[in-house]
Every structure is written in structure tokens, then in C-alpha cells.
Length: 194
Ligand code: IMP
Image 1 (cartoon, rainbow, N blue to C red):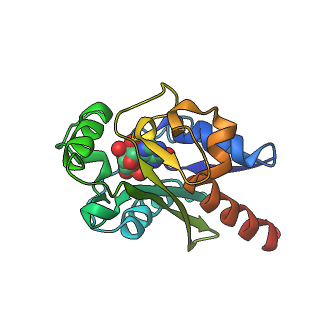
Image 2 (cartoon, rainbow, N blue to C red):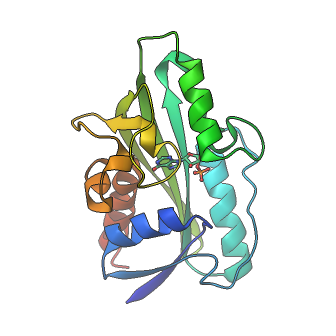
């Protein structure tokens, strides 16, 4: 089995990605790789932040690795919180704080359309490749469900009747932005014979 470092400290993302790649690749997190750093996300686009994360880990390890950056883009808020999704309610805000702020901002609008957008940055044999995955959906009026993380309790993907937080991992992965981006990464690796 081939090993790839996933440049993240988020155990939910690692679990999702492992369920997507199956047995072909061994995905190891930063913690598994013995790397204990918090990689900054200083940029104003998902693309630049993803590249920053994979570049940092590649420089540290010299190993093939990938990172991802995800944002929730809400139509009525002109794409906000977007790249700032993790810090929407403030620098050290919790997911509950972020969700509450989002629901408050949308209190006066009927347009609940939103999308998750993921950018994966893969560094393979020293070269960077990016892949995008988008999941369109709507923001609910109140949180529902305990599974998942982040904005999952208030997001219903198009074609579903439950929030991501009411789904099993496999159900979420039928719709998910991260799954769509990962599929492209996997097909790139298989086309490249890696
Ligand atoms: P980041 O990609 O780790 O910077 O995540 C940005 C923000 O979006 C964080 O608040 C995450 O909790 C949230 N987020 C990222 N991916 C998902 C997802 O799949 N579902 C719900 N929230 C997510």
C-alpha cells in the first residue's frame, strides 16, 4: 500500500478521506507523521491556503503529501464566510459559534442557497497539482444532527432531505465536496500510474 501524508490536524477530515480512498493508499495525518505544527492559513483564497499547507509539509518531510482547504460560500452573503469559515465568529470561535453567527446573518433572508468548496493541493514528486470539489445545498433554519463537524448540522446538500450531520459517513460521502475533490486526486494518481 502506498503512503501519502494528509497535511491536516482535523481527525474528521482524515476519517472522511480514509473512507474515500479505501485500501489503495495509506493516509497518514500530521500527528501520525510525528509533525506537531499548526499550519497557518494566512491567505485570501482557498487555493493559496491549500498550497501553503502542502508546501510547508513537503519542505519538512520531502514526502508526497496533500492538503485541503474548504469554505462554505453562502449566496445571500456574497460568498461569505468562504475562506474565513473556520474563524467566522472570531479568531478562536467554535463550530457552534460559527453556526450561530451564520443563522443570525441569514435570519432576514429567504435565500438559503450555499455551497461547500474544497481545494486539494497535492505535491507529488515535487510538483503541485490542485483539484476542486463543490457541493451545492441549502442552509437550514436551525441545527439538526450530531454527526460530522463544522457547519454539517445546518447544511442539506441538493438531492438530500437531511443535513450532513444527520448522515452516516458513507451517506455524506455520496454528496460531499471533499469526496469530489478526492476522486479527482485519485484519478490523477491512477492515470499517472502512481
Ligand atoms: P478548514 O478547511 O479546516 O479551514 O475549514 C474551514 C471551516 O469550514 C471550518 O470551520 C470547518 O469546520 C468547516 N468545514 C470544512 N469542511 C466541512 C465539512 O465537510 N462540513 C462542515 N463544515 C466543514
